[in-house]
Each structure stands twice: as structure tokens, then as C-alpha cells.
Image 1 (tube, rainbow, N blue to C red):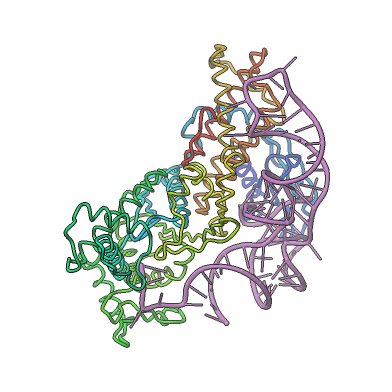
Image 2 (image 1 turned 120 degrees about the vertical axis):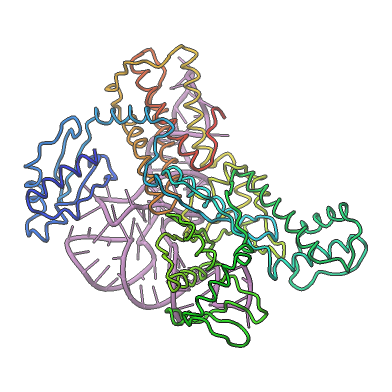
Length: 541
RNA sequence: GCUCCGGUAGCUCAGCUGGAUAGAGCAACGGAUUUCUAAUCCGUAGGUCACAGGUUCGAGUCCUGUCCGGAGUACCA
């Protein structure tokens, strides 16, 4: 109906010579105000110098609405125009949903386009923590939304296995290894204290028992890296997150991409030397302080490879490039974008999604998290406690802009009053009805009398179902995926309400068939939505 | 100091590009089950949308300022 309304309304506005820019339709909060509403008369009042009511009158008087689409319209104070959708039109759309089936909710916005989503990107220094979890699920869900919009999506994990951190990791493993052999060495300053290092040391000892203090640190480093990466990948696999590309920062060095960036920035006179370090003249680009690109030790900071990496992403030709960062990386990307712009690289394809932190509450107290000090709860532990579905749902049910309070104790004990179960239960209930229907040989009927679907909670459910594609589009355009779980929760609510209002399988065969069609649509919408979230839609619970 | 995010019911949070009487869940209280799964449904109660100005027909939503909480402001990533 909305398409139709926008079309006839703008046509009428044009013929009156009135501006159409502010023409919008919205869904009234209260269905008493119709199924669609426009404030066009209010917005035109000023420029036309007429009362909104008069404008609305004039506007509507020249339109003959198609009765099979718009059953009724009215002008409401102070000047809204409300439209009521014809039920037959609603029922046509229901049929359409059923035809689309598992494609219902998809759109073609990304058809023929490519997208790259970079997320997780944790360096292999320790297992994924509860903190990484948010980004992991956020990135994967955004990727799913993109795929639902027919983008060709590359999920990418960017990592760095060189530098100070990794050396420290190697040192830490070496110490733990030698400890196992009886050596009383203690961890270096800033070493990794986690027990997982000891586990890896044990494994290394059994595989290569002859290493000693003089052994090449490289052996320890690469062994630690390999083991930790396997750990990370196993965790990702558990929650069904699969990256297409693991991009090693090192390749940027090997292929001369890093040198190219610094050379070109130097040519632009945006780099200077001070105290033995190479500085990026960001003040010249509008920032309040300059940044180090290459430390006095000769090692680049993360900033330089980040610039090279992003430049490379743009070169790879993606139509859409999405970076998922935690709030702690807030400061890094403006510099990177500024550098790219200075280098003449187009940055309009790049979007950055910043998510706020996850605060973990344990026994009502905040747990401080640090990988190095091993003060953290791993993502694996969380999955063990609450399960994959709950983990995936919890991480994205809230806006990425808000801090996420993850109360561990609550999450553990809450398994029965969890929103995700509310959703799944709705799906299972419907499945149960279909099992019963099958037992009674209520097979799909070709002549459905959709006009029988006219009770309030039925119409409400149908409207809710039809809203799904818009929600997907909203998630896409805003990259805020929490709208989806919120929507699905409401959908489940409409479904539960319908369930308690109406018995589906009854002696009224015609009505039963009509309701089964509606349920089929509701079920597939839930299923499609849950699929985007990566949450299972159980047949029974 | 500066940059970014948040401040909405006792708690955790929604609130679509400004719209009509600000909504859920949890917690509290009351009700519904000879019925397709009660992990459900219905009802009651709970609000100065941090505060103060501004913009306009209209502001939780936009602008300015203040206060509170968080993140950053590294030759860590």
C-alpha cells in the first residue's frame, strides 16, 4: 500500500504545483489512526500559508483511491491524513509472503555488489574473551544482513603476528616451558600470565622435549601463535562464525605496501623525523596532535600498517567496506581515513561501526578484563554456560552504541526466562500445530478463503509479518542490527497473542485452512529472522 | 582540557529519517489451563525522557550550554 500511496500522492502534489520533498508515510503507533499516515499537510502549511486541514482537503479531493488497496482515509487533527488498508490487499501480500518462502525479507540492494566486513581481528596472544564476543557476533550478523540484501560478502580477520606483543608471548611460553623442566625463571615484565600458556608449554614439552634456554625464541613464538590461533578458530567455529580471509599484516611488508605508504606520505611532506621516530603530520590535516608512524626502534606503530591495509581494501575493489571496532579503537580510524584521503584514495566506501564495551558482572561486581594479566572470562566459557543461541542473541539485542551489561550470574540462571526462548518457543508452538494438522490430514488447500482472516489479533500478526522486509532494510541502511531481534521479539509476541486468542485447528475447515496459511507465513518469517541472527528455530522445545 | 558513546519506570533496555495518550522484559500484585506446547496470555501499579535554554504547528528525538557515567587522548594494538 505504501508504494501505491506515495505514487498517487506525489502525482497529485505535482499536479497542484506543490512541493513533494517532505512527503513521507509513517506507521501510526495506534492502529486507530490507520495503517499509514502522512504529515504532508502539516509540513506544507507554512509554505502554502493555508491551514493543514484545508490543504489535506484539497489534496485528497483530487484523488480517486483504489478501493481494493485503500479501504478508507480520514483527516485527523491537527492535519494528519490517515489511510486504512483494505483487507483484501493485506491478504494478497500474505500470499506473496508464502510464495517467497525462505526468500521473504530479502532485497536486491546489494545485487551485483561486493562487501567486506572486517571483524574480530584479535591478535593471537590469547583466547577470545567475552569482550571479543560482541564484535564477533556483531560482525557476523551485519554480514548476514548484507547477504540477505544480496551483497557478495567477504568476512575478514586481520591479524598481526609480529612485533613486541608476539615476542612477549614467545618469551612467556619459553619461561613456562623451562619452568616445567624445573627451571625457576619467572615471567618477564609484561609477560602473559594466563594458564593457557602453561597448557601450551605442556604440549610443547611432550612434542619437543629437548629445547632449552639457548633455543631460538622463534620456535616458542610460532608454536604459541599456532596453538592460540587454533584455539580462536575453534571458538569461532563453535558459534558458527566463519571468516573467508585471514589477512596477515606481514604480507603488507612483504609486498612493499608499507614502504609505499610511508614513501608517498613523505613525498606529500606529511612525515618528519623527531627523536629518532617518524611522525605523521596529522596536525596539518586538522587534528590536534601529530602521531608516530615509525618508532625510534625502527618498528612501525599499528597506524602505518592500518593505513596500508585500508588502502589495500579499497584497491581490492569492494563496493562496501565495513570495519567493526571496539570503543578503544575509536581514535585510530580518523587518522587512517585522513591518510588515505591525503594519498588520494577514495574512502567513501568505508563505514566504521564502533561498539561500546561489554561490562561483565560477576557476583554483582564488575570484572576488569585484560588478556595479558589473564583477568578475563573466555568466550568459550560463556558459550559453555548459556549456549550458542543465547550468546548470539544477547550480544546483538542491544544497540552497539550502548554499553552492554552482561550479568554472568543472571545469564547462567536466566535460561528459562530469556528472550531468545520466547522467540524459539513461538516457533516450536507453530511447529507443533503443523504436526497436529498433519495427523489430521489437513493438507494444504488450494482454495483458501483469506477473507476469514479478519480478527484484530490476526490482522495484527499479519501486519507484523509484512513489516519484516523493512526491518532488514533498516538494519542494512543503519548498520544497526539490534532492530532485528527487537522486531522478532514483537513478532513472537503477536504470534503468542494470536495463539491464545484463536484455536487454529477447529471444525471450521475453511477457517482452519486460512489460519494455517497465516501461521505458515509467521513461522517462516521467524525462521528467516532467526537465521539472520544465527539462532536456531527449534521444531519443539 | 579535547574527541566519541551513553543518561528514558526500582533494574536491563526499545523508541524507525521530529508526529497523535512515551513502550517492552525482569522485579511486585491480581487473573486465565476439561482447549493445537502455560517457556504462554490478560490486567493493576510504576515516568519532571539528567538539567536549563533554543528551533516550530509539534521535541525523548534536532541545536547550544551544564551535570553525571564510560571509552580514548602511547614511540601498546
